[in-house]
Amino acid sequence: MKDLKIIRKEIEVVDKELIKLFNERMELIAQLNKENVEDEKREEELIHKNLSLVNKEYVSYYFDFYNNLFNLSKEYQKKKKGL
Image (tube, rainbow, N blue to C red; front, side, top):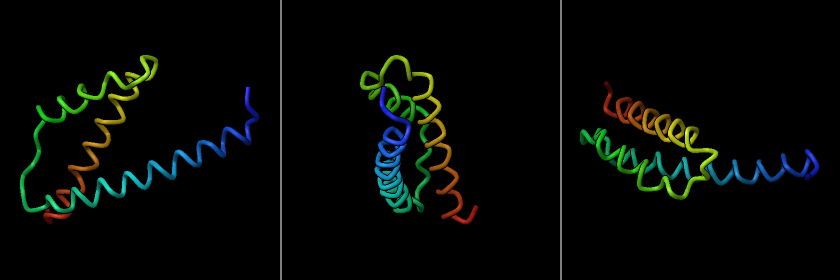
């Protein structure tokens, strides 16, 4: 097993990549602020589309992750619209 410090450093690298991708996603969402794009059917399709890429051990966490991401995206869209 790897040393705790090494694992933490590797997690930091992954976290930086996640933050970069999160920023990119939110910037794209900002471009949609004039449209009502809430579509639960599409959300479900996106979740299931990539499900095969997820380690089976993490599936329930994957669902939570994406649902939280969608909720944050909707919240941000509402803020951008002034709602």
